[in-house]
Amino acid sequence: MPRSEVLENAAEILDAVRHALEDWTGASQISRLKTAVRNFVEQGRSVTWALHHLKGDMPDDEWDEWWTKATAPLQDPISRFFYDLRNPIVKEGQRVPVHPMGHLQGTLTMDQRPPGAVRWVLTSDLRTIWVMEDGSEVPADVPTMKMDRWWTVAQLPQEFRHVPLTDHMEKHVTALERVMAAAIARFGTTE
Image (tube, rainbow, N blue to C red; front, side, top):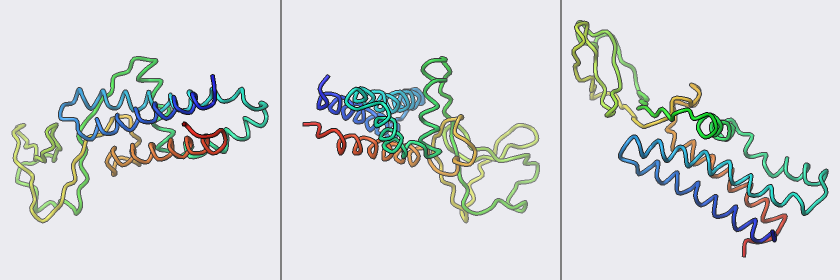
């Protein structure tokens, strides 16, 4: 396959990754969030697979050196997370558990807790509530604090959960764009 076709194919797949990010951002249903994640991780891996068709255009040792440098942006922990997430979802058939996430700016102090409250929870519709001893719920909106809310995937490592998944997805797209730019710089344009 000519280099230009390989690059065009990889560019189209990269567009599919961008579209999956847009789908995630605009999703109004959990099923659409799950579909967006599936598409994002599957197409993200497909960018590098498509570029691998360029391997025949150079000696193996030269390819290995170039490929290691070109794909260095994908060694970032977030890009590794998305890259590694594909196999459990696509090949092993694991479901994509999405759930709400909240980041509290400020602190909840004991004097803000209603009497009888056991804990506070971020509900699936992104509301904060106190769960009472009897199982009832009381709104936990505290006007002096800010609660950022977003959707995420359960597999996201704990150290990354304080940032919305959208931000991580954007960072991964940027890494894929850098790989694509390296391929175009080495092998020509997509035109």
